[in-house]
Length: 372
Image (cartoon, rainbow, N blue to C red; front, side, top):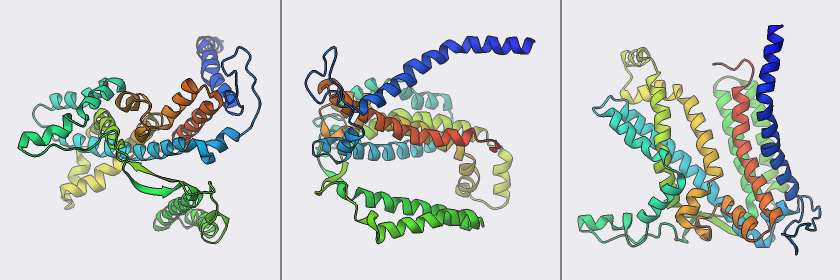
């Protein structure tokens, strides 16, 4: 009887939170999805009390990825992908190096931990303001060489229009297919080396099918646009990446340091007795044990990068196309252009990208029988 009353009391306690979550999170997500399937804002009277709204299905999404007027959104998507890769990779590498350095029990370890963690306590708006001053063309980092008698740098940190790693958006389906072939082939090879031939065949079969489709089938000839459209990595994003890594590398350092401190010293000693060098100890003992921490950091940093807004807004402003990201486009489209349906479609695209990153990770954590 007590257990039933306890369960009832627990349900009553959490019920208000569940109702608020259902209405103000999932309810608004559903409303945003519905708005993205309409033409709200694409005609007159978008801000009227009773606007004329018509169902258009997936037309807004089609326009974002293939429309003539949405070229900025496509470049913003490219900017976000490059920013995510550089930001996550650099934050993990720098955080790991800092953690290894502090793990040596150097004098003043607590002071160094505080210094490296301090940027994380700042808001992204404050970080953006600081780095905007530091990356101004006529001073800050560009003026550092003058301290050593060298000429000042003239790199345009946030206004450069130079692009590298350019590709044709028209051929994006083929690029994605080739990327899928590469991922599936690598997975097949990994399981083949492990001796799990059935699992290797499970990945090898779709890889061969996809390879045939892209090499000789329709996937290789599919085109999103009837004309070439070049996109690439704009060097102006380097300043945004630098500021973001400065803020979040201390966080990854704390994660890796906690992981290093939980590794038993007996494992390191056993590796040294077997003749492993310090580098081999890290390579074959410590880094494999830090893999769960690495994946957790990738998920957290990745979702921060995919929805980045305030740092870019504070550093470069919303009108700088060179450093724009989809969240900036959503803001401009929705609140300046009053194109609510298009802005909602951009929001749904961002939601799906974040979900594609987080849901598989959560599913692996909650999988029954998962090794602890």
